[in-house]
Length: 186
Image 1 (tube, rainbow, N blue to C red):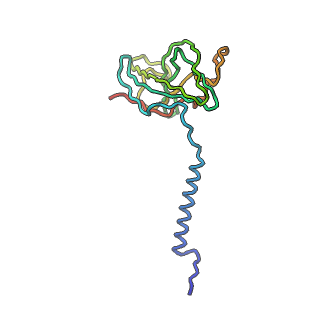
Image 2: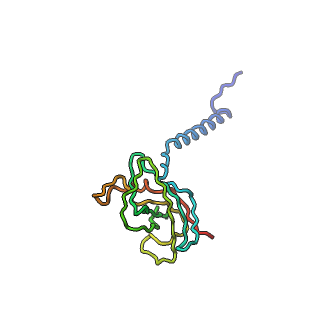
Image 3: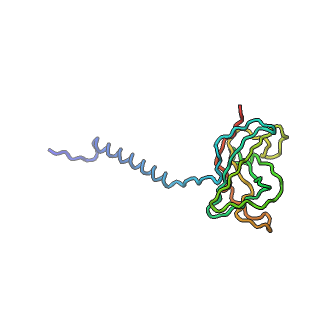
């Protein structure tokens, strides 16, 4: 006598379990494929961890940062005799907040032009001076250990010397690095 499977035996349960697992994995894989990719940071740093070490003017660290202009935009970087405006934003529970800015002279040199899709590399020297009097607001002279990102200021998407502020500044996401960690030498 031949048995007719009615879909309720052990073989049917195994097939259902296998189909459910396959469906779950397929949905997960498809979901992963559809998730938007995080665009690369507009600024690459030479490391993800920097150590502040004592020096004559405060604790210092050097960050080599490479800016990549958007593929569709020639960027103009404002500067004074080669010193660009840059700083650090610190990650807080509220998001990214300006935390430190480099000091530069106030002259106005012709902009550094970076062709669309081109790159510009700068060696940025971070100087943390904990002995300076506190400033009002979130921007400080000292840089406590934490998670930061490099931000460049005065990076324009066009330049017109006759019309201050000389052109539109690129969106923030187009002039920041990925997260970096800053610690003090022990």
